[in-house]
Image 1 (cartoon, rainbow, N blue to C red):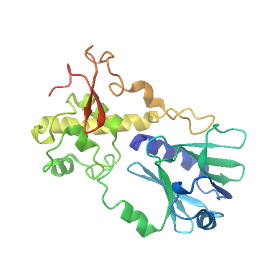
Image 2 (image 1 turned 45 degrees about the vertical axis):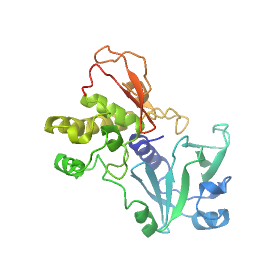
Image 3 (image 1 turned 120 degrees about the horizontal axis):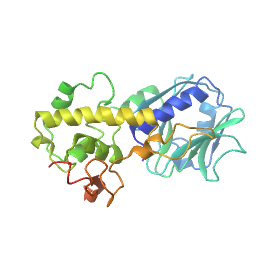
Length: 270
């Protein structure tokens, strides 16, 4: 599932490509992927301009000059492609937004969605999300304060969107590896130094992943040379049985609260 770095990459690239452009046509092939009827969806957004593209947690927000917003959550298996009728993946597209001869294809939205929302509904949608970990107000003091009452496992806490927004299965394991701490430790067992190591690792891993374009390998457009660059830099996630690139130990996989969890038992201390 795309996480903060992937959605931040999409935000940057789509801002360069479609910001200020007018939606000239809409195709809805799966009504369950939207939250209103196809007719209303088309009537509300056809002819409107995209005036801003934002990210919140794992969501992307396309703001229209009508004051309404399109809220995207790709969930598991969802992705986008920007191309034309001759240049696009041979996959079923749930929704297509056209900008003249350029189309933005939404693919794999079986669990994901593209919802049309008023401003107040958008804010309500985000009301229970935790802070953004790359924002200036995400200080170490704030991080410590938010974890004071937590008693769960470190990985579970990092992936709890009500605690910190945008971190998912892959980056939580990479953060724990960077911090040299096992994802299975309980948050309340961490001392001050360990807590600071986790805090720094959140910034290091996420900033590096954003810089490299995230891990999702599906290109956003034909000449895209940025998306997916982090994939070659993954150190533990999905590397069960492979050698640790830091200490030479063997990466293990466990199940933690029904999530896959990868770490090195030799250099990630309990």
